[in-house]
Amino acid sequence: MTDSLIIVDDDERLALRLAQAMEKRGFQVTVAGSVVDGIAAIETAQPTHAVVDLRLKDGSGLDVVKRLHEVRPQARAVVLTGYGNIATAVAAVKLGAVDYLPKPADADQVEAALRQSQGAKPPPPPELPMTADRVRWEHIQRVYEQCQRNVSETARRLRMHRRTLQRILAKYAPRD
Image (cartoon, rainbow, N blue to C red; front, top):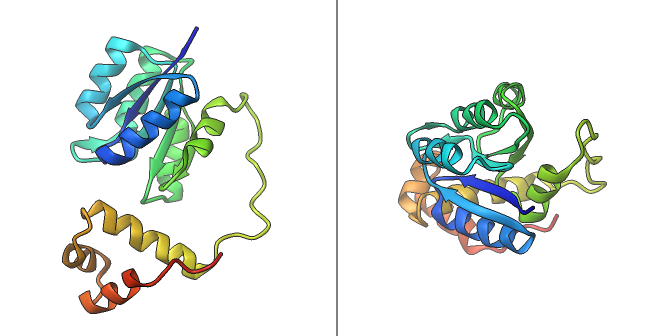
């Protein structure tokens, strides 16, 4: 039996890239771009796995996780977010999510979270975590992509001068 997966994310490019990667890993994938579409797809397809963005344009991805576990209690859900905090991580786990990953999460991380055995301990932190400069650069790049590469809007959201942001974007990523 093929594992079925629903990806609920309003970032269409990210969702489609992740869908392609997960199909190569043996999942039958459905993509939805909103809470309403995600819940409708869950009720129709009843997937065995889900990857859900926390913040969607029409509400919280936690509503999708909750409905998934009402329809299919054994389903495994992973919540992705660029706005992580402890309270939402706890809420996601209470609603049945098996993991809570920061964006940008790659397909290997998502697959590992979806396939980990029940009660398994998370992997240890890396010996060489990202530097503070690299974390800052990754965050700026994520917001820049969310703003469809609009420098002015990105600068506004980051509360940064537009020229400063342009200089940062012109540089290469800092080394880890």
